[in-house]
Amino acid sequence: MTIDSKFPNKGTATATVNSSNGYKLPAKQETQAKRKMFCRGVGAVFLGVALMTAGCGNLPKEAADAQSQQKAAGTRGGPASIEVAIARNGKLQEEPEYTGTTVPLQEVSLRAQVEGRVLALNVDVGDTVRKGQAIARIDDALLRTALNADVAELAALRAEVARAQNQVSNAKAQVEQARLELGQSQSDSQRQQRLFREGAIAAQTAEQTRTTARTAAQALRAATEQVQTEQQAVAAAQERVSAQQAVVAQAQEQLSYAQLTSPISGIVTQKITEEGNLVQPNGEVLKIGDFSRVHINVEVSELALANLRVGQSAGVRLDAFPDQTFRGQVTRISPAADPTARLVPIEVTIPNSNGRIGSGLLARVSFEDDASRAVVVPETAIVRDQGSGVRGQGAGEQGSRGAGEQGSRGAGKQGNRGEILNSKSIQNQTGTLFVVNGGEGGSKATVTARAVTLGERANGNVEILSGLKPGERFVAQSGRPLKNGETVGISIISETAQGEQQ
Image 1 (spheres, rainbow, N blue to C red):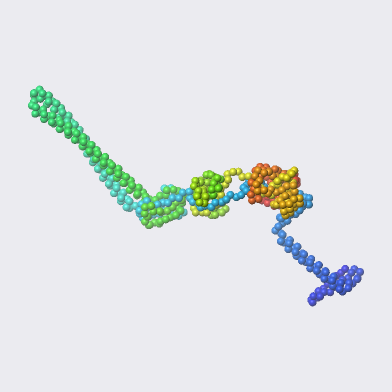
Image 2: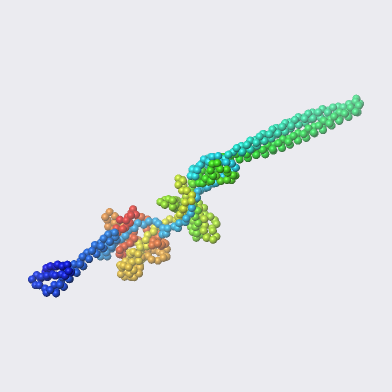
């Protein structure tokens, strides 16, 4: 049959429909045939456009389409499509972060101890200084004048001590002279007394020599007392010298305060005054911080205190260096908590050998648990045993042979002769996962069922306490229930040994 069509501008159409035997249809039937053929042509055009649009829109989903095709192939009887992951140690939940502010290991305020005008200020903010380095100098003219006066007074007192000591020497000489005179007088008196008893001399003469001896004895006592007096004068003069020496030392110390030196090695963080300004005693000149290490003070809940100890490792992130994580340690745990907020101050110290970290930076601190991390896998990889063993492996809440929330032989979260781990409390329970063998270098991949001991569960993951080692490959998801020793096909979105996807 041949169809000839033409479409006049007025919307009418005429057609001639001839059969193979030359039979011509009536005019009414010819019109109906033309309309039917026209509608079929228009429908075919729209169907083609729709198919082209759907194909263009699904181009970015090639991986998902491939995976669906593989699952469909597995359903039709081919190898089951699986998604492979690498077992690694990890944590179920990220440690909470506490915010704090960086402060230097030590910060001192350099202050003037004497009054005076600042003659020189040798450093500025940001400069590095050494311990004992000269930082500033204060006018010391008045201090030097006072020191000179004190030194002169000390010299006068020392001269006075010398005079007193000379007097002591003279007094001792007089004592010796008085002692000699006394001895002579006593000898004369004894001789005269003997002559008087013999009648050779008169009594008056004997009495005179006795009086002379007594006078010499008194002179000796007086000379001895004078020595003691002079010695006391020397001691007093020496005490005045010692006091004046202290005054001179104080004046020298005051003079040394005119030279300001750095008490620590560090960096100048703030300059309070300038050259030419008058400073008073205890007036602040500048601040110096030791940034060899940096402290961060944070406050944690009393509930977290049991998991913290001095020396524990901590990770520190600074907004100023977003691409770095600094390692630190807990150096102080305050024994007193805030009685209102129940927060405990914790001090964390991080090294800062290059001096890049300054003070006042926002820091985010997380405390690391020193306990060894367990292997963590997705819950979708675990199958809890039912009956005679494990036969199913599913994803999410889907059964092993069904879609949505209903499987082919069960409803809800149960697959074929097995179910995905779903309980909130699974500590020390057992389950099964499939370990992947082969599948590299073009070899066939097979799976082996392995019993594992489960730990805690959180965020869609579960801890493996035993039965799986880090680095082993396991089935994270499967398109259908698996059997021990079964040959499988590895999905293109599986994880490789380098931690990437295929």
